[in-house]
Image 1 (tube, one colour):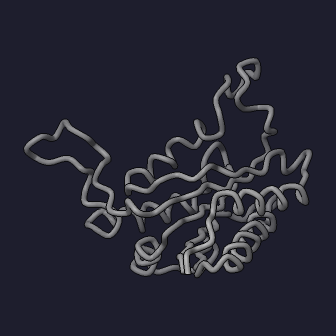
Image 2 (cartoon, rainbow, N blue to C red):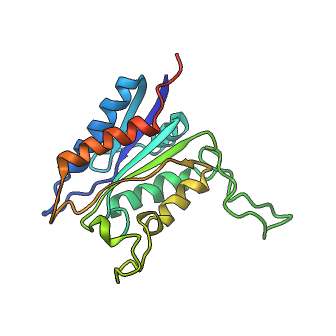
Length: 199
């Protein structure tokens, strides 16, 4: 049995109730349960306990962050979650400080993570089309990738020693959605990158 912790970071807005992100969470849960994973889920719309959230991170072999891209980053409610939970984990549950020592404070910032056996995956939904990324002729992102845009989030997990799995994304979900295809692609992505646990 392997343990998967899924965080639904969606924040409800009048134009975005959260059905897509909730459905993606359910698809991921069903896929992983079928593979033999034990799955826990936390959502930003529900109350959560900081100590239990730290325990969920320590328990997990893999974490999936399911999030919309709001103003080029995660919603404010997940940022609040990070400020509360991740700051509380600085004493050892998630990391032992920032990895430096007082004897050599200039060396290897960000290497104090204690979740070095844990993997993580970003699963993102966004209004921007796929064509907006990785293309220097597109003026807004200037050739940068979606992972470039979410580099700060990658660094947050890297700070805890976690290892990345390839990012999944649903593009253009408001103006030109292909939701059924997105669901199929998520299943294929999970099948490719999440092994069936050894019995």
